[in-house]
Each structure stands twice: as C-alpha cells, then as structure tokens.
Image (tube, rainbow over all chains, first blue to last red; front, side, top):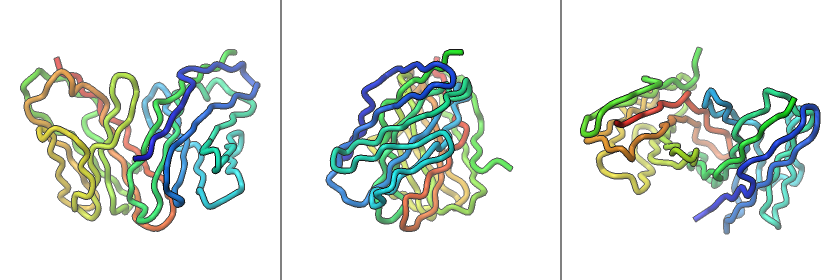
Length: 116
Length: 114
C-alpha cells in the first residue's frame, strides 16, 4: 500500500518570505499523481498544485511550485512571497494512475502559520 | 453554483442515533467518494462509487452504509452512532479517465456525537 509522510507537523514563515513544506511517499507503482491540498480554517479542501509522475518538469502555479524528485520519492511544496491568506493546513496526497477513479492517500498534514 | 455540496454542514446528535449526510455534485462526474477526517486532521478514504456502483469499501464498520441513487448523489447513512464517529466527513467527486485529474471536495460535515 502507498504511504505519504509529511515530517513537519508545523511550520511558520514571515510574510513575504519563502517556505518549503516536505513530503515523501512510498510506492512501487510507476504511474501516479501527486497533489498538494490546502485546508484553511473554513475546512474547505482546496487544490493547490498537482504533478504527474511521468512529467520531469516541476509544476508551478503562481507563487506555488514543487520540487519533484521521483527517484527519491520526494515532493516538496515551495510557497514564495508568503501571504497571510496562506496560513492553513497543507496536505500532500498521492493517487494511483490508471482508471482515474482511485482515491487519494493523504499525509498527516503540515500546519503553516504566516507571521505579519 | 456550488460544485460539490453537502448537507448538513454541522450535525450534533446523541450516541445510538441514526443519521444521514447527503452529497450532491453538479460537475457531471461519474465517481464520488467519502473521506473521514479525524480529530488529528488525518484524512482517509471510506468509500467510493463509480456510476452508482461501489468500487472501494475500506475497513469501515458496517454501521456505515453509503447509497448512490444516481451519479450526482452519494449519501452516507450511519446507524447506532458512537462517540468515535465524531469527525468531519468529506464528499468528493472526480471524472474517470486516464490522467490524475483532481478530486473536488465538498465543504465537509462536522459530526459531533455526545
């Protein structure tokens, strides 16, 4: 079974600075997808960014980018120019490829605080 | 227009009661899921349905019974509620196709069993 590990239960960053959240995963599959979800206090799950395992290029979405190291099974999230609205729980998630209706396997989350 | 909606958003009930949570998606997706988020924020899959058919049933007590009347709806019925059932329950949906297209989540239902 696949597992996802987020080793940082809590992180903090100064407003306008950069922070990196770590995620490692364990799988024997070659076809899979990785995601970062954000959960603010409203508890809504919001997709931040996704990465296809077959793509070598790291995904970016505005201030959010990932460092995908397939051989090391590492998938970290970098948030640049941090804003107060970035404060939330961040979950790394894994999804098997294939049919496209496989469930997400989540890490335990990292709580990010942004200091003004 | 809400993509994935759940009702109710909050549910407080006593041990031993039976309750239901409803989920509807208007995205035209063919797969729907129930996830449970426990008090430590850990999210785990409970069930998934594809075209109204159950395809994933994790080790969930049989007091939990999902029902999908059509592709757009997935309800969760819980019998004989226990204190340990207190959690946030998320419904999600996605479209079956090759590719890691994301799942869209509902707002969650916070269930409190007293």
